[in-house]
Image 1 (cartoon, helix red, strand yellow):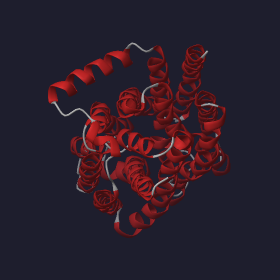
Image 2 (cartoon, rainbow, N blue to C red):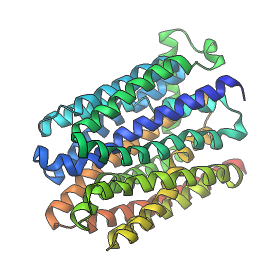
Image 3 (cartoon, rainbow, N blue to C red):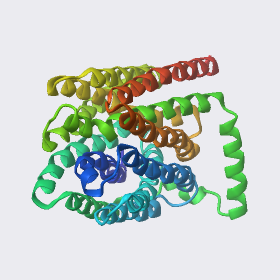
Image 4 (cartoon, rainbow, N blue to C red):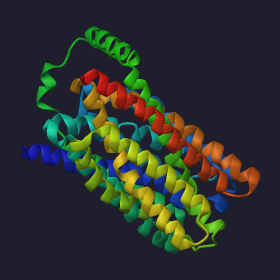
Length: 398
């Protein structure tokens, strides 16, 4: 690979690192924000849902724009918007304000995955796509543990608002880094130049995608994975604090354990998928994530919760690059950003309903068990759609 390809991978590494750290930093700061803002679990879930509504609306737009226009512009402007949203979260005083400010962060994050996944795959050889995406995704696995350790220190010394300020400043720094390192693929000059041609091209492309059964099977699986992921990342720290009566600093470590173990998953399952096939590894990830949610529901001690979080992390780390690489496996490379963007709509829908429904079950029952059991069901139901996708792939290649 060229030096520029390595620079692209580095820029994308830091982009996803801060994007997902800000996203899941919300759950890590939530135990301190709940009493300060005086909000319920349902309201806390709704704030996260609003974030995902904005993220879901704009992600397919960003994916398509990246395929047709300018990667460098998107990956400079929108990480800055992400950082701005985090800085604004440091100023919230109530529920409505938190919904508005965190939605700005969601808008910024909309350009921090689909364009990233598309750009990386355009700069690396075909036989390195799964590995390259796994390396980029390690940014998530290292960023979240870093902030899970740093945020309790900041909170204890300066309060939870300082946590948001710190992540926001880092987001701004990543925007500057991307301006320096990111370049558009060499084939950019061959893209369509007429606005009318672009509209026609996008219309035909979307029509083709929406007629594909494989597209819908992966999309539905992604929706259920989105539901599954938001259960631990929204409520695991609060669950550890309120049900297991652990200190705040300890409760944030469970999210860090998930992300840290995710690095191992990325380094092992990503390259494995290049050899045995994306579908098999995606099914394995769904199985592990569902089983781990069951372990969280039954955990009665910090030790068992650490074990469940670690198991979950192995699959969580690998699941994102697997879905991104599946886009290039099943569709033309010049449509990768659009495919990942549209699939992220499904992910967003699952992520929107998950924290609201799970927060409601917690408020109604007073326990977290049902929320984690819903995560179990979502993980296992996603397997059915992945099996259907694998059969479609086999019949197409036969």
